[in-house]
Image (cartoon, helix red, strand yellow):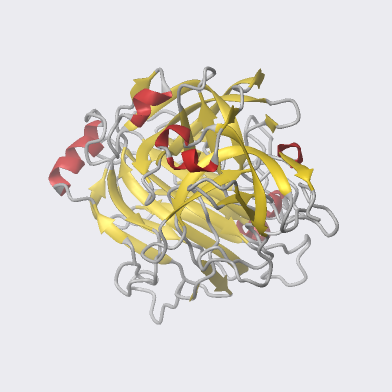
Length: 490
């Protein structure tokens, strides 16, 4: 399992967690677990010790890869089918503020309402918990259908929507009423984030984000002697008796750092890993996140790419934020992004988003940069909107099989391979990145071996299977208008 505690003193991190004024990049990540390749028997405790005979989330499924973002290499299918206990990770010490928790979460539960069985209410969430004084503090975000089932009268809103919970505020279903946003639950992947700020007694002491968008400003429970109750445990999953199929991945807990306000993407790219940065009003070059059709099965979880208007800088962003991109008109949305700079295993820089907000739309995207495939190995093109040309040399189907680490039911990450004769080929061109198409519908024209094509998309580099393959160059197609068949195969 790829899990670690940051190689920094816990005491130093504790100071920054309390005052939240440490410099950018100082002990930002305290704990991360990507659940690769298998679960560690002692890292996640299967329920509190007081729960005799506790089972739990120990059914991580083999090599099925659910998530693909610039910083997430793989994930596991985590199934909780009428299993009543959740999994907990004890933090190295209590934290009283100035910390965040985030994870990628994927729901595979498509039970219609009303459920056929009483247990068929969806549940799946992550929690920050205070175990030292039980009941003093709980921060929870996710799907909490069981709460609607046990209410009088039954509240279907909990079935259809996401929900947040704090000890002080109790349950708040995100159904669009009373000033709360509408955040429907959905099949597929999204990101949950809890930001625990210092205690003031006001709304916003704890903040909840879904798809990197702020959805609720919550309160913290007060201690009798003053201040807010600390948290000491991460909880994944539910302890309710319901039908669930969920995946959790890339769980990360760390300190909130003062972000470096970068006016240019190049400034952010120049910062070391673990640096918190803010970028303002950057145009989206391509968005590869779930768009909203409930009928699509297990959609692509997400990242987007941002670029300067003059093409002087570009950057991939790991997020499930759904940005507006219109390939046909080369228009897109501008966004503001806050997050942590990181480097993937191919050496490509990316921003691990904490929060993204809308700035404006629609706006003109930067002019598309024509290039040969060899140039895609340059860091200067990472996240940039490019146009390449080449001959289709492979369209993987069942034979030959896709590279291990890309496989998934439904051929979720389809691509074809082109070569332009330069030393940089062949290169994968990803399409249907966002969804598994409905029968008979494909977002791009069908290509066959021997076609000569032009491809517009976002340039990227990654290591598909850590330790077994080298870095791979790719171009990510935004939509059907990005692919042209210049000459069909004879």
